[in-house]
Image 1 (cartoon, rainbow, N blue to C red):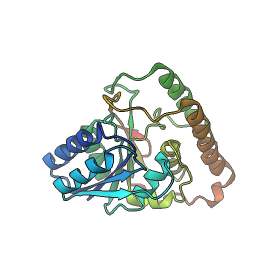
Image 2 (image 1 turned 90 degrees about the vertical axis):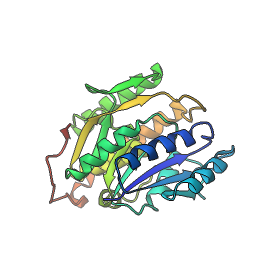
Image 3 (image 1 turned 135 degrees about the vertical axis):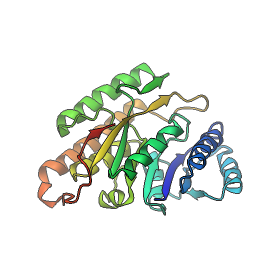
Length: 254
């Protein structure tokens, strides 16, 4: 199965080259057929030049320049609309995600799962340099999600996840324009009954560049997306077509 990796990139001149090369090295070492889609999200620094260099060095790298207004969610949607693989992994461009975990995800999909979700807050996961305020809001938000959707998975808001392409098609249309897309996609997949594995993953704070988070503004957007999908689950359940051919038990852990 061909793997598509989508990375939205906004002003990541300091770290996107290292992030991409480490990921490519891992994928090629495991002989996984892949394409790496780097979405330039209105970068105003030298990021476009770095992306062009990566494209010249690797045939599997594709550069897409988003014509949408700046926004993480918009860039993700642009990338997802251009994938050519059978499995898609969404990664961050700041180097916070471990390339080895991409392989974990891919193997879980090969086992028959529809989705592979990582958790930074389970046994065997490793997290470093997580800002305290962001951590507290993360834990509160994920507790709310667990309560509303009655699930055990405790890291829904993490962007780093993997899906079969048919899952991405089914959860359309995606409406989130910013980082709240990180909860919209997995929650839509869950309420539609797609199978998913939860695996421990590693996360590290960015080594360079500037964080794009506005915590107060994003908290409102996350809350909107959580309630939006929850209302869809409650009020439109008769219109949600459940998956009737699950390959494996839903919500299993590694």
